[in-house]
Length: 124
Image (cartoon, rainbow, N blue to C red; front, side, top):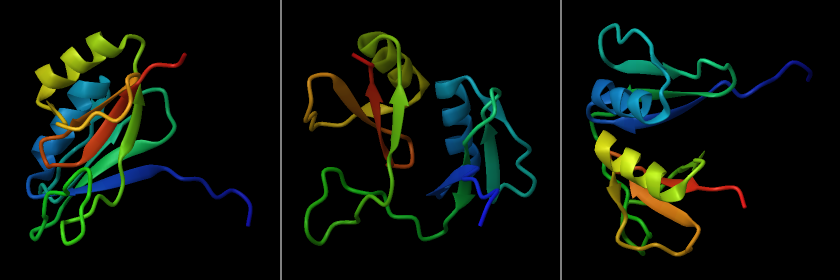
């Protein structure tokens, strides 16, 4: 089939509006209307794939790195930054926390306010 394209990655959260605000600040993207607050888009002003945050009343924060029996990560975002330390400072100021496990020297794994891991990385 032609003309198929991925438009949005949706993350579940107990508070989708707050999570959407976090990603809008982090990425300097546009926050879409929240309507009844159960689904909020975060739009990339340059086009391309966006992020949405959706209410999941039974949301369980993923554990990273995963272990048997823990809530597993279903997806994580890869976010390119021009400077790793500056990108990390910005993410922390937006409300992320740095994951206790950092498996690579040139990547910083962070956790968003709803518990989803994401990676900051610099092109080498």
